[in-house]
Image 1 (cartoon, rainbow, N blue to C red):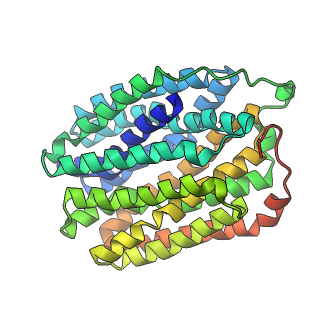
Image 2 (cartoon, rainbow, N blue to C red):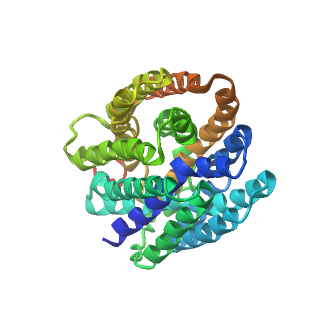
Image 3 (cartoon, rainbow, N blue to C red):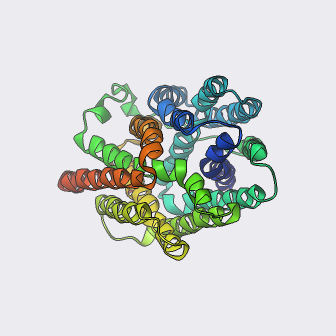
Length: 380
């Protein structure tokens, strides 16, 4: 229950941040190019500072403490961000905030996957609480968009970050995961595993294809005349579909690599339709595809990571996974600002190509992954 509450609080921060932080940036006068650069910062920190944080926390057996420190620093950082309006100063303070914020989710997933590996729990039902909170946070913020000045949206994000700090105090300490295998050179076995690289590369490509959606969908839908509550409703439809996928995931009989491939191919279709400015009714249907493009990809990825990564290296594995996501996501976010400024919705065609590449990578590696033995204490 304490983990579910923490997931909920952390994802409520994301539920307000992802769709509406760009809206806040635009409201205080930041132009599209700066918005692209600023929104690239979380992705940049994922492949620079994040792997070091997760590895240090795992080495010190301090995953829970690192989670608590991370959300505290996040609340302080977003408060400082809200006091800025100049692009460069905002960029620098937000960069420092992201250094502490971005490790929160990999650390939380590592904390959860320890339970999956050790006690045979299912990741999807644990993770759905975060998605539910994401939807609630997005809807609440969408409602507020129509009732408060867009310049005040940052304080909604700060409020949820403070709630996450309170929730972190309820987390229970992890059992000591140190094993006789700890004399293994840290991380080197993972980095020599071609199957591990295939998983994180394909997931990064498919998840990276969501960058245009995360960064510019709210702005674009506003330009098409949709209000804040409608925008939040569209985001919420996607998250509801994601929750359904997580809830049903223990019943999935397809191989994890197939689930990821399905996620990639679904993203190709989703972004092509979105690029053609569909009417609201069709857009709502397309948003339900988020359950496949995001949810199915996550379920398949986490299932494979539990199989491929030993329990005592799970935080390190999550760090590498997040770093790969961050490297590609940062490049995509930076490029998307310039691309969107020139071709608008045509940016989604680029996203469709990325998703197709991710599906191809995982499909090409499926035989190697299907033959890969479960890792020690994988719980699979």
